Image (cartoon, rainbow, N blue to C red; front, top):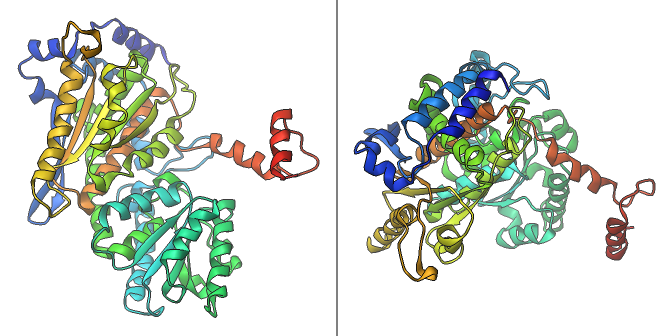
Length: 504
């Protein structure tokens, strides 16, 4: 960490810490200053998301200091390098060009992404038109970013309008694959194999079992029912996939940032190309905001200011995310990989690693974990995510109650409640941020997801982290491959487990 950044952190640590109630009382314009709207194009106008940091401990002094910290940590230059397609992933010597998949970034990379998208669109539309026969189901096999992004998008957007029913399988546990088999007719099922390297052991093992299932159930040419999504097209062809059904994506697109590439194939197949394009457009609008806004006006950067305040200045080890929308039930799990795989590393700039991301769905979570949030000894910053427009066609009372609970929980966390009975007392002063969408459609999901990608990048810059490698993922997987090898020695406890399970 450079001296300027050290000085600013020292200044931030010395700032007063008034409770949230006092911050509101001292500043009648607090809501106006800390609630901003992020917008993107929609049919007939603009749609957007209200971002409310008023119930956090951010104030003008904190924001001004964090703006100077961003300057001291070289945020503008790091952002420029990201957008320019430079080698921002220093440990692996490559760029991180997921933004180019959405039309923002280095010109040549954007042109390549456009061409690859057109290749994918042609295949998607050919399948819809019957080029591969009747297709009613797709079993999408991947893991990590190759599964979490598609699963999120399909669960959120394809509940009542899927052109093809998609079943996401990521777990090597055979029960997961058997459940997909049980839901599908082999004669009308395609298999998508999603692997950046086309060597991921969980994915390739599941793919081989899927091929056997097709063959065992009367499909004469199982490989003719496979689409490969990979940055290693030659390996996919060598494995047996015809090159016309190989959808490549660049090596510079990381797994947890890959939804926008051919990894999004199952989304386009389920929803149609126009919906996938709308998701890209929503993300691109946030990219443009992130690229052209500075300081506190840059809303993903402002979100990172709040994250840093609680992780570093207040010692919060976790951050909770609650989606008050059933369509976003997978969003906390998606963020877990995005944030913890990106920034779960010792910061070069000193201080703590990224907080643990966890969460759930409202109102279910209120009857499970909110007891701790309100009266526990842990300070846990909370993100609430909701949509003004409902996703259901039932009595509007359902959605009114849902939103009322969302807003009331934030108010209760902040205000608390005084009681002479200790078990009924709530200290309050618990921070929360609310992200309120106009509606949850494809563009909104794209915008929400891109916002959190940029928030993650901003946190990495402020902490001095490379968010684009993931060596911590690889150690355990490498050791798993060595179990059963005679020449490898594990600790006595692990050896006993191996022996007891019959693995050696």
